[in-house]
Structures are given as structure tokens and as C-alpha cells.
Image 1 (spheres, rainbow, N blue to C red):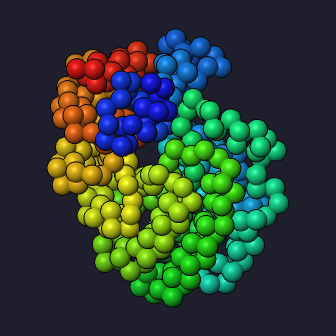
Image 2 (image 1 turned 180 degrees about the vertical axis):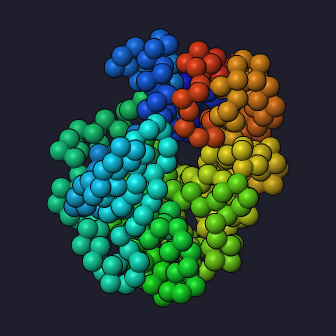
Image 3 (image 1 turned 120 degrees about the vertical axis):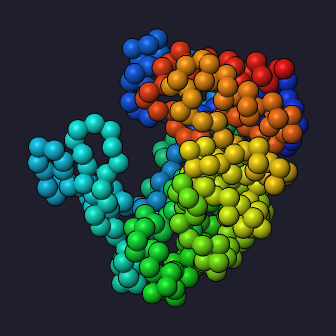
Length: 356
């Protein structure tokens, strides 16, 4: 069975003869390391390892036109820049670290009105010049095809518009603005998806939130129910009317309290079930037997060697694979502390346990 077909079977709680394997991402630093450990130059990790990847249609799903990228300040240790999404941030020049966010493009209704001109889903130029060829390729592609990036949601996208603190206070101080933004965004997502979902063969819809941290969600279930659930129900229903078979949500952190709400909204599956935040896929499966679970393997184990990898996989995979509806992947991107040999061993061990 081809890996793409195996993905469909796994998501249907079947057991195909082939285990579909892919990872959500690889840090640039990870790939650079692996180049020195046997990954050929110019070859993608998934191709070299004999697994698959997931791709999105060639289109701009966010601001169009984008903001001008420019440097506002520059010193020996850092630079302050405006990125293509209108966010002003401080970047560290000394190694890999998250930037410091200083200012976001929306803080009030006037800002939101100004930004709407960049959010016209029918704007000429949103689609790549090779759209027709890509759409044709998608029908027979050996890899997975999904629609949705960081714009596809009702918390993560607004956090990028407003910044986390401003968004959280606006639920209380500007609730009418949040609902107005949600209604606008719902219409935007629908209009943006029509051409893609009519012309591209999709395997799943990807929604992005990142709305939890180690100790739980960044908003209460009550706020989710008020400010997100109605819009989630409508967009999920739309995607499925357009032919989507599975709609998934990506959120790091401990999302346990929010899973019932996502299920109520019609979401089929979640990822990546971050182990460091206490997410235990065995417990989640017991509580939600029909939920599609993608992830839940502790990425940190891959840096520790074969014994740690064996212990991690043997503690989770036999039970999860037996019950079905589970795709074994790491609980985040593959980080630079992982040797290439360990990554390949991890993939082989997953296949061994699947066959068993």
C-alpha cells in the first residue's frame, strides 16, 4: 500500500500493511547538522529516510500584499525588524532563540480596518504561477496534501494580529471587536478555501492555534465557548461540505481541557500532544476513543540514544497502534540535538513495533 493510502487507512481506524510515517518539521539547524552526518547535500530528510512529507498548495494565505520587511535598529547582539506580517520584533544574532515581540499590527478597531485591505481572498497574485500544474500533481502525489497554515484558526491568528497580552485583555475590554474580527475571518477563510478545495486533492485540513502552555490553555473553556466555538462549528462544517474528510488542530502545550470543545466543534483530530506539557496519548485515547491522535512521542528521547528511544516507543506504540486512529510522530519539530543516526533508528523502531 502506498504511504498516502496508508494515511487514509490509519485515519479511518484501519490497519494498513504499511505504516505511514512523516514528521511535522525539521529545524534548519537540525538539517545542517545532519548534512555532516550522512544526509546528502540537496536531499530532503524525508526522501533520504524513505518516509513522506506534507505539502500545502502554492498560494499566499495570509497578508497580500505583505508588509515591507525592514530593519529598524541594529547593534552587535540583536536587530529590531518589521517582518512581512507587520510585527516588530527583536532578533538575537547569537544562535537559535525565539525573538522578542515588541509590537503587533492590530490593537483597536481602526488598526483592524486598515489591515483589511491586505486580507482580500480574491486579490490577484495570491496563487503561484504553477498553480494548474501543482493542482494536477496533487491528485497523484506520493506525499500528503493539506490546506491551512497559521491563518487557519480563531486564536493563533488573532494572537499574531494583536499579540498575546492584547488579545487576552481584548476578550474582556473589546469583546465586540473580537466577534467582529471572528466574523470577518470566518468569511475570509471560506472564500480563500473555495478554489483550493475544488481543484486540489487534499488529505486533511490543518488548523493552527498554539493556545496552551505547560499548565493548560491560555484562555478558559468558557471564553473558548463564547469567542471560538460558534466560528469553529461553521468553518468545520464548511470544510466538510467542500469535501474535507478530516479537520485537525495543532496546538502545543496541555490542551486537555479544550479537547471536548474541539470535538463539539466537529474537529476530527489533534496534534502534536506535547509530552513535556503532560500530554499522555494513552490517557487521551481512553477518554476520547474516536479522536484522531497524531504525535505524542517525546522528541527529547531521540537525543538520548537507542535505549531511550526504545523505552519511549515501547511505552506508547503497542497500545496506541492496536486501538487505531493513531499516527506516530514526534511531539514537535525534530530539534538539533538529535543525531541523524538516532532519527533513522527511531523510524525503523516504529516500523518494527507496527509490524509486531
